[in-house]
Length: 287
Image (cartoon, rainbow, N blue to C red):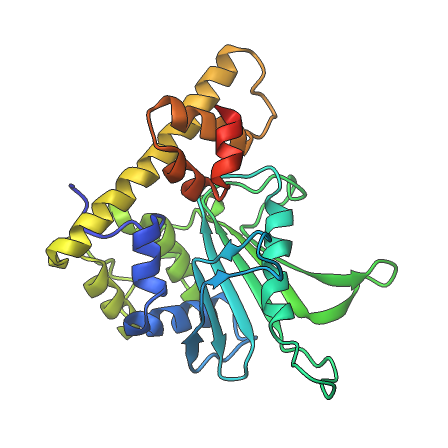
């Protein structure tokens, strides 16, 4: 590997930086930057990232990062590298798990709910419903249509389009700017930028330096990088093939098309299913 710092778009890279108790100060800093003063997260507790349905045959959900703050508010944080046709449905579905788990057994529960935040860090432009949006940060809440006022403020979806962030180092002003710069550029940096002098970034660059990994972590990271590259290559191949067939312009590439390309490249069914957030049965239907 030639990069000096970890790629946060990989599964291993993202969870190393934001999904471990050892590095939770990075997650706290990022969340406070993301909410731009609307949140004051002082601490987080990591929760079980694998959520099971109400029935044995119900579909489960596996979050990249799932935590709660000192007030009991829930945060789902996902790094998403591939556009999926029903991506909005998926994020809504994910948010139902932290809502339902708050229901208390017995007859005394009054339906009081703590806030739930679903955060999608997208390594693509989220065209569906946001075609005309120029900014890269989108906050979605339930609103009353006529008044355009928020109807319920305890359920929030935040979508961050990483490719749309185009600020250079000398344009970084806020902590959110700086975190976005890290998310987009960390793996191509060869040294720590002068603009990132806060203590939390000292921690980040220490944890992100690949040469300091032990043998096991290095192997896990290399596997994660290979999986990430397979996804990117499959997407690019699907795009080229679709252009050659004259049907690519203005069309989002479906998950099934990308999964098919992965299978054609020799990837195992189980691996494709995990990467594409599909079941093995769904993948086998593609064969």
